[in-house]
Length: 418
Image (cartoon, rainbow, N blue to C red; front, side, top):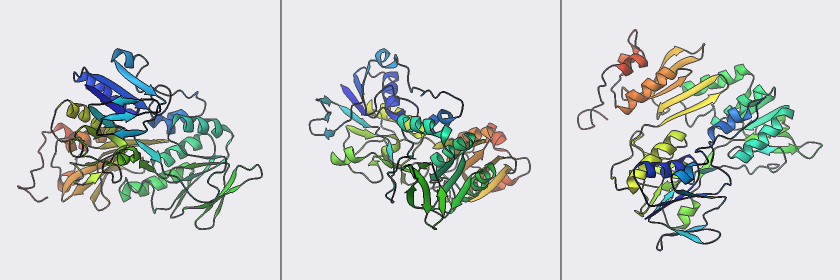
């Protein structure tokens, strides 16, 4: 028996690790397109860029892991094609046979197509190589323009401020992180970043880049015609799933590799997990693709059990985090813009939570610098607790106290409105 995993990131290594933990004794081979020991990506936009520190990538597993677990790592080796009839993965040299194949191919940065985008000094941030280039450039940068006010863009904005740079962020949408956060939290973060010194321009995208006298990027010109000096630009406009290999193999793709509730594709020998997988969410009641460490590792553990014969759906609660300067943002559940929202805590002191209610019942919680609220929310939502807005508005209510109380699950749809 042999399991081949395409992808050497958080999801891919967790599948390999979990297979061994669950007792799998067959061959495990991990194909990693990047050379070197696989590393953690979240610190690349935060700790790795901090001033006065020598950046060191944090390995996902120690160097001895692969030998100790009898796992073969093919580093710097891209997978070229899948032959599903023969159950082979074709490499530059030779191929690997599989009984089960797991796509953990992650995602790639979206790119701009505007004039001047290829000028030196314009960066993306996805890989260790990207982070090294930014770390080397930051100490001499003065005027930084960031395209996109998503998580990566705002995390980098905070890092750039710490280097003493002037930072402008251009975001075409009306609020930052608009696809992930409630309007209440998005608007708060807009004001918070401005208070830190970020020149956040909402409703304003990028039209073109212009060179300076040295031939490098010298300015960004926005969709309003405004001119922003720039000696360093970061493009952070989101990612696209790496699903071309699966599509070329005849597997269905739609904003990711389409899988069922067990994380299997239409081919029962092939699974997909993490940033590249489009799955039916038990919490969102819709098909979606999530980009988070939690989703990658939890789906990896589930995929390992599926390979070993388990046949139950993936139902783990989604949760996320982002550190942006002094602000620790944590999210539990999946918020929607039309949720009923209640703010608990002190927004002025940057210690508060936004509780989201759907049909009167708690459905998601966003927190800033409130770790206890976040942990309680995760417990309550994972257990299906029925916390109503009326309860949350009662004097003395806290998520932490509610998390210590016996959980009353939300009734199934047949017994209550849904």
